[in-house]
Length: 391
Ligand SMILES: Cc1ncc(COP(=O)(O)O)c(C=O)c1O
Image 1: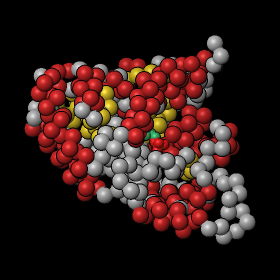
Image 2: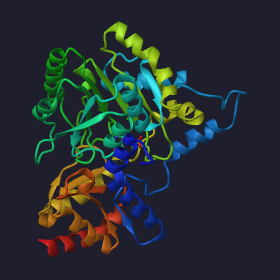
Image 3: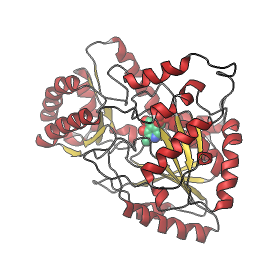
């Protein structure tokens, strides 16, 4: 074998996604394709994003494009934003600027887990946890969300904890289900993790993956598990709320509730470990733009209209769909129960959804609401016709 074992495992765990991505990328040549697959933008970038980048592009000093770690002003803006949003006393030193949530998750793995440690991930959940864990020499352990409702299932997490468990990954608002978990769920999880950490004689960390934190519908409240469990780190990305995943920007934040000595030790490690994972810091321009970007957002009212239109039409036609509380995804069970057959039949009509098998749920499908309302209106008749055929 040419590749390392961990590369082989990482590739095997994500082949289904990268092969699908290659097919979707080929769609850019087809002007009639209606692409509801990945959470990519389908409209011109937000003016606030372009303006923030434009303002910073002209150098103002000789070191404008010098090596950048976490820029102080970016850390300050993030800490202030987190204090306001989560009501916890974040300091700039708690923040590591990263290349999106991807970079922050990699940093968390390198900072907190040792080779061979087990890391619990939700199913259905984002399909890149597994390859990232393999690449970091860690062992993914799946814990199912509650059947049907896709609530956090704390008992299911408790069942898969072992003496080797080092970390639990949670994601709210959740991809692909759009669920937002309440504080009571985090309190229950915190109890389980405190107990298991004590029994293990070793801390179990919680990684709260929050890239969709600012994308919520109907004013639903957001609670971060960082408010319930001290040993929590939060990762965030600006890609979702700004609809610009090609401009890499995010952060990892340490919980201010950590005991002071541990917090100080981890604060001091953020820069060296950011370097150790391959200079995981964002580009200079994106960091300078952070204070301005903190308030740039997609049009939530328009996203709500798209959710309502699609959810209303599908639930009205008898689909089993989860009403999104956050994210820009709509998750449902395929008519007839075969997600692959449903998505394949639609693809033949030029309507491309994401088959649930990419999330290990072969009966389901995911629709990205980053599509335009016009795309939704054009796709709906096909979706309803194919559903009628398959039932
Ligand atoms: C749940 C979840 N976590 C992390 C990421 C990574 O985000 P980014 O590409 O902005 O780093 C994504 C992107 O799709 C995601 O859905």
